[in-house]
Amino acid sequence: MTSDDFEALAPDGGALAIVDDQARAAADAVRRARVGAPPPPLGGRPMGAVGRLRVMALALVLIATVGAAIAFGTAASRRTTPAHPPRSQTPTDKVAHELAAGKFAAIPDGMSGYEQLHVDALGVKAEWERLTTAFGPYRSVGPPTVGGSQFSATLTMSRGKVELAVVVGVNGTVTNVDFGPVIGPHPPVLDIAYVAPRALAEIHALVDGDATAFGEHVERPFLQPAGSWMLSLWQQVTRAYGPVQSIGSPALVPTVPPLFPAVVNVPVHMQRGEVTVQVGFDENGLIGSVEPVLPGSPSFALAGTMLGAAADDAVALARSVVTALGGRNFDVVTSHFDQVAAANLTAQSLRQEWDALTGRLGVLRATDGPAIMCFTPGLTCLESGLTFDHGSAHLQVAFDPGDQIEQLTILPGPPTRNLGQ
Amino acid sequence: VPLTEPDSTAPTAEPLLPYTGEAFDRFYQREFNATVTLAYVLSGRWGVAEELAQEAFLVAHRQWDKLSHYEQPRAFVRRLVANAAVSHHRRVAAEARALVRLVAGQRPAPAAVGAEATAFWRLVRGLPRRQAQVTALFYLEDRSVEEIAAVLGCAEATVKVHLHRARIALARQLGAPEGEDE
Image (cartoon, rainbow over all chains, first blue to last red; front, side, top):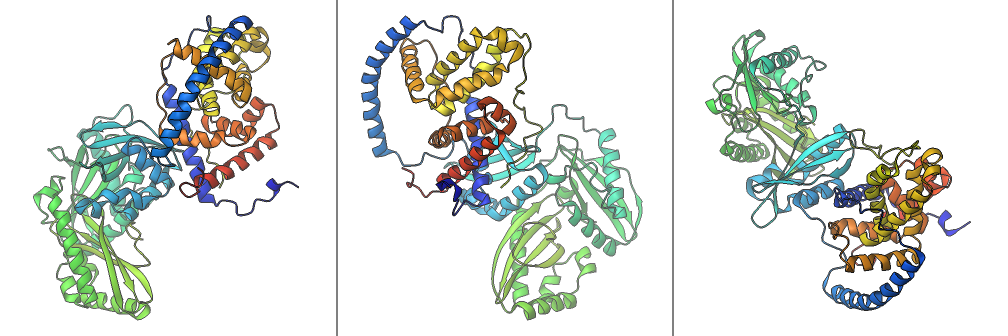
């Protein structure tokens, strides 16, 4: 038996995963430092025994001189430098390493105002978990490209690659973190001939409630809002506007919207109105967004654009919804409902649900958020944590572009930043 | 925690297969940088690493006829470098030669690696020799346990034990509070 046979208090799995991640990042850094360095000519390199002795003698003199200087310098630097070196070289390196280490709380520290609402630590954690589920564990981060205040770098995961974008504020703090697909080498031309059949296929699957077919042309880990949630929302749209009568021809939105390089609107004729299903295509030609734009929505939503003010309005409205629920003012909540929400939830049923919740968990003591989970032309989804005497729950609420509540759900447990969960 | 599977999309390490009749020059051009990098993480200095790699390639050159047909030259030079880099005397000698070349301005200064990576490899060099070698080959070169065993000339089970102990030791040091390891 040796002392190595007794591994008391061995590190947990998380610590070993950190070792793996740091080792791979360190390996990448070393490999990158050597890329492109030409090998020296081999011919003049090897020395004979006499040459070596001569060089050794000279080197010993040099070592004695330089060694003293180095020792002095090291001693001086130890007095001034901290025990641990600074963490990283670029914002993308820093964020990637913190993601890999599970230090989500450290990332949005520098965020403020809307950005902090948009990208809070829990939101980053939820998105990172979705990505690692889809692409496997993080392996390394590539060199950044810089455009204005945005740093972008490719994250290599064990089953693919993800684009990381980090926006840095004037004082060097991270003000936004976003993830997206890596654009392939041969992106397709996003004309109507390309997008129309793909959009129609997805909409038919959506209308049929076919969870298997829905998502065939979708950039799955990045789809906004999440596919399963959208299928359930569509059922609620159907309750409000009646069954689908026919599906019209897709039309490309003429302007280039900020979120996707191509957006197509497809009119869906329902028994009690015409809902436009808007489908956004990313640079790879895959679908990044599918959502209904309800009758009477403002024109900016149909044009595939978003207004920053809509997010601010939604945040304020979500706060008022939480306040109204806490005060049992259910009529106030339902007064903000649009046709979809009104067809699926009444003040009476909301009261019953709330009473059942408070009967089980006690009095509402505190709330947090709201945090924005998705922000697209047709929907702004937010989440608020609800802390009761004997447990917690969370409220998820989706607003349409007219700032009306389109969907409201109260779910058990702490906030998840995952729609419908 | 099980080690993650190698990335199927990322460029993987070249297999350690024999190179039947390959010209030495091509082998040298292709393998030099990777070999220097391995030597660097185990020695901590680029100049020393280049010297050690040169030594290894010189030995390989002398035995090329045999190596290129019957052996695994990649594994051969890596074994030489890995052993030399953790040998104190050979490292000191290489350092002296590197110093001379540096003073003579024969080689440009290599690119900076970054503080975090430097700190990590310093921890690796603080491990027992075999653990450091196994760690470098596993993470830096993405070698499998079987390949590492071939490079170092030991059993696969031995490699697994060294790798396991190295990861635990590194996890403890990385998890240590600030200042504890200084």
